[in-house]
Length: 143
Picture 1: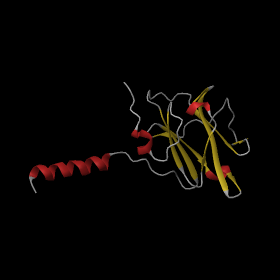
Picture 2: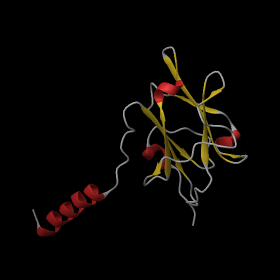
Picture 3: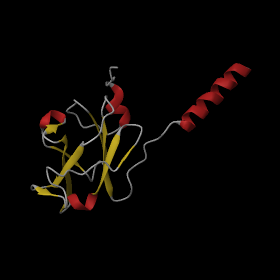
Picture 4: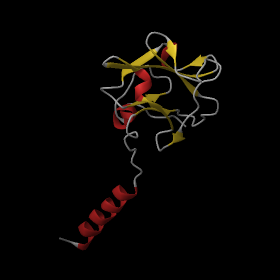
């Protein structure tokens, strides 16, 4: 093996080791990841409720849940999966919004919290993605 190919492999391994990895949500939590091309997340929150139309404690339309944290995708929210359970189902209902400006076509969105512990949402896209790679695949932010 040549010095050059050995060096390239070493650089690739180091690069992979330094790349931030989005970890799975903590045990018993669901995670909603949100990416904005403009990188501006001030006042963006998530309205969460369980079926039928029961908001989570301390969450009201004018007082959405603010992001739990940031990652290399954007911001994320964690909520207790238990809050969404109704019998054997765990439908997570949500709207990402800033005041009356709503994401994902201004529709009420939902996913199965038992089947998917984390989702990824990209601004101006109505889809729910189940991996960061899938979410970013066809999205190129214009500068």
